[in-house]
Amino acid sequence: TVPGLFSVVPLAGDQGCGPGMYEAFQGPFRFGNLKWGNRPSLANWHQHLSEEEYKEMSPYISYYENQEAVPVAELAALISSDEIVNVVRGSMEFGPRALCATTTFALPTRANVADINTMNNRDTVMPMAPVMSVLESDRYFDSSARERVVGSDKFMILTYDYLNFNNDDDDIAGVCHQYPNQNLFSGRPQLIDNHDTWTLTLLENLQTDHKVLINTSFNAHGRPIVFDAESVIDSFRFEFNRAKENDLKLPHLCLIDGEV
Image (cartoon, rainbow, N blue to C red; front, side, top):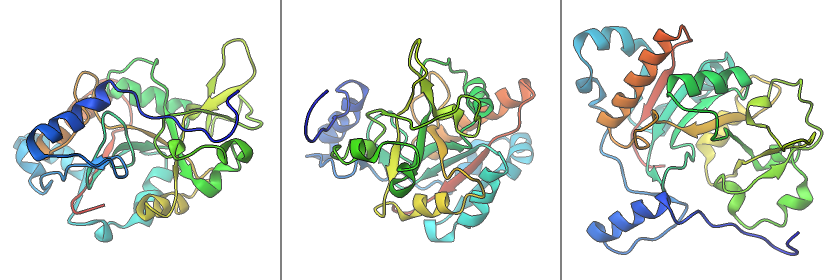
C-alpha cells in the first residue's frame, strides 16, 4: 500500500549487538554490505575434534585456503544431489542473518526444512528464506514490485508474494509460506547480483530446474551464529550428532578462508 520507492531497514534488536561491540573495541563502524569483522583462520578446525570425532566427521568436512580454491561446480553438484551443506567463508554477517557467508544451503524442499530444523533443534516458527539471482527472481516474484524496492531484497528483510505457486510443487515449497486462510504464498528472499560472484556461480551451477536454495543461518538452537573455528565445530558437532540420532542424512561442512 506504500506508493513509490520502498526500503526496509534491519530490526534494531540482535542486529545492533555486533556493531555496538565493534565500535566499543575497534572504532566507527561502516555498514557497507552488512558484512563486517574478519574471522580468525579456520585452518585449525581439526584441533577442536577428538581423534574419534575426526575419524567419523572429517569425510564430511572440506577446508580451502581461499574462495578461488573451491571447486564450486562440485559443491553445486553435491547440493543438487540433495545434500545439506554448511558454508562458512569470509567476513561475518551483520547480526543473526545468513547472507551466504555463514549459511546452511539445501534444495528448498519441505523435507530439507524439516531435517535442518531437527538437526539444529529448532522449531518451525522461523521461515526458511530463498536465495536466488536477481535475474532468476523474475520467474518467482512480480518484477514491478521488485523494481520499487531499494536494497532490502538483498538481505532477507522483506517478503514478496510468489507468482503462481502450486502447493503440490515440493521443489520450492520449503521457502514458500502460506498466508492464513488464503491460497497465497510469500518468500523472504536474498537476491544475488554481481557483487557476490561466488554465490552467483554456485547458483548457476545447480543441476536443478529451480536455481533456488534454502539459505538459513548455520548455528544450532541456543548458540550464536558461528564465527571462529571453535564455534563452527561446536555447532557442526551438534548438528551431526542430531542427524545420526534421528536417522537423517549427515550434513556437510565447507570452510573457506580469505576475503569475500
